[in-house]
Length: 150
Image (cartoon, rainbow, N blue to C red; front, side, top):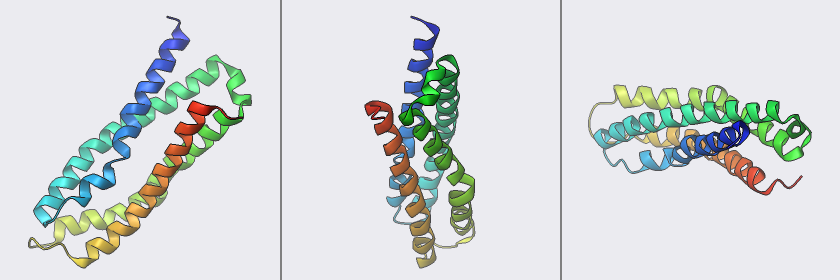
């Protein structure tokens, strides 16, 4: 097996490791019916997010490494589009997701009692909307990687 093929295999495993858990982050927290369950769900979500960060970093590194090893990739529309979309999705973390997750996290810490306040549903709805957008971008990237349409 060549070094390039090893990088391709690492790239595929990184996609599974990074994107797979990312698609269920919203689902995990939607199952909480009490504040205790919700807090536990967010703790699980945090642990899954570590896989997303590690896998996503490896995905970017291996993708760029493949481009450096095979510069013709930088002239292929599917590769460049995938890279741009990945960077957009990556930037959505600190620019869109983090500012919307902070109030949710603060609410989880500060709220007393077992009832889930209406404020949580309003805040999480906004957060989940952007997470679904990021997931849609990742689905487009996956389709581009598989189909290589242009």
